[in-house]
Length: 480
Image (cartoon, rainbow, N blue to C red; front, side, top):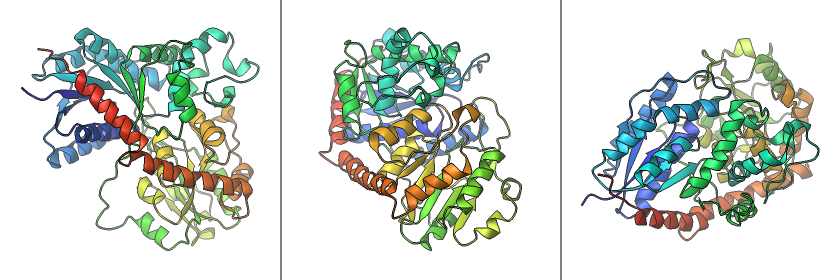
């Protein structure tokens, strides 16, 4: 009899696709050959995403792993008329429902589980129809999961727009959350994207379990609140498996990247790294503020990944281009900062840079994957969120995890940060004499040890992963 398979249904974003594939590979190892993995590939909506995913699939297939296979789903019509990227992705997933059902039904082996992405709650309906256990792979924090699970209750308790309410929002296990820290999907309750958010929180209650890319020690109070039903008004939530950090580390290139070679010449913990994610593009006014702050920051060294505007601004296609530095930067900036700064105009190897001993701070857009990488390498953070759940992540980094120095911004002006505020925050994070920076650096060093211990044999994440593997093996069903 063929071994049971775990069906993965990832979306195409780098922060979603790569971690789920890595989790699937870990599941194979933990099962000691008792399971296989089948990945259902939805066509990516952009050329760049399609190229990235094709390259990843090619690497996996070239590795010779017999127990992981990839199946391409047919294309569907891309929806229009949505109010946010989250709703847009979820609607694409709903269109794929018949394709997902057919692909699973055609498998000639038992199906142990369907593991879907954060956006894929429509796929949970398919798994229920087929009688297959279903798990949500949640590539964000446990704090974000708590907010999602709590959102139906918040929706009933608060009658006004959140920015109009008095006081803070209570999320069990977290400090009081100011409305300004809520995800962008919650800021306008009249939009259908907000309805999607609340419906997703309800939908997760139907899952067999939720797999979270975090470590139990990082978010103990939040995980306890979810387990106790405090986020779901006393109703038991699905089992949560904190298995992180799940990070992929490709083999180092034969020749070090130019950014890494530049870092080799810098003193330890002296460089501020600025990078805003794979979709991160800053318009010229923000670029000018950053340039002014870096010039006035007391001589601190910096490595700045600066990208150009996307060629296509539609949802799902906002991939930055390579920057033309002479057009974006103030005249003379590169010459005035020569020797202590490097501005890199295209993609850069973020993990390799964060791993370098010369890096002492990280200005990040606060995507959870980037946060986990900074925690893994013990690099403290200046949070500059741009979209999605990033403002909420920034809040937890400062108020809950303590690994960040706060950065004041005007969210009503598209997350604008004045040069003087950024200069203050850079000095606070990077100056040896700064007490605020010292605390963030010490906490970041603690989280580095916590993350690595969690994934070691016998660690909390390793144990959670083994529980997940055992539970999945027990749930296999024959579809055909």
